[in-house]
Image 1: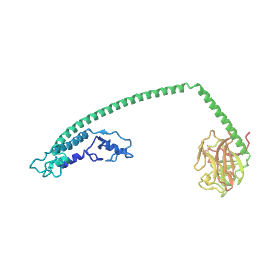
Image 2: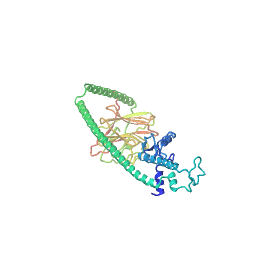
Image 3: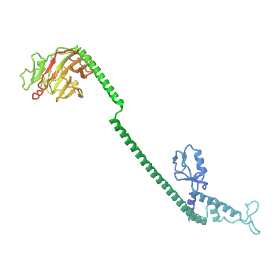
Image 4: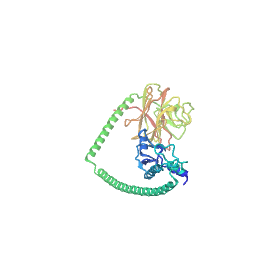
Length: 415
């Protein structure tokens, strides 16, 4: 074995902390070896447990494993210098005719012309012969250690496998128990549905009574509210100058319906075309007003109020942005408030008479089902800065499916 190989082999058995041959060598979990006292003192004097070689941090101080192989080699290396020292002390005392050593004190030993290279090696490094013997012994120790590690590893893996099987078995039992509990709970749930507790009927009846009471109270409130707004009823008549040529108005200006025949009417800037619309003659720029319109028997209609300056020719957008505050019916059962975006209305019953209430200063437009005294919808926060007119649209005739007229009714206050 070369000297470099010997040096490398010995460096592997030096502690990187004390730089000496290992004493009680131990291994860290990261695989590095140190003297037990060196690494223990190193960790005691630092804030964290960190490997001095790879800087791996252990958040809890790990258990240190005794390195049997390095321990055996270290013991051998400690014995080597002792043998060297013993052999040195056995040097012969100077004899007559031999040159005494000028350095020795006490008993003079025989002087040497030069230090033997083997002795220098022995004092610093192990001899080549010892190195060869160490190699053989090291291989034997390593083989034994490897076999021991393999046996330990196999034992460890067997324990893990056994524990895994045990855990899987326990999990299987747990799942079976859980499935059994779920099955029992489902059976109990079925029993509850089939045989409800005696108190359930009491609760249901109590809830039903409460709903009935609330319904009655709400109806009273809506009736009171409708009665209040009906006090602001005004007389409204239809303005023929605004009516579409396909609309037929009654002589008293209280009814309007569409026809299939276009009337010859003078052109007028106020007239709607082609939309089947008409406005009330009366306008309002302050206060409150209310009117009622019969919509019975119709499949389509619009009712509401508009600004005086609205667009009346061509396609018209019925939204507050363009001066319209209205609700409508389409396809016989689709009610909608013409907001932005539009709001679908889901009504309990089809209104036959619609009440329209406006509070100019409050910016409020509300619609009521007069017969049921129910609020249909309210536009709130409206900005009124012009005169307002009642707005009506009987829509087209639709092959007589929608031939019933819109009728402005006299207001009869609810009792």
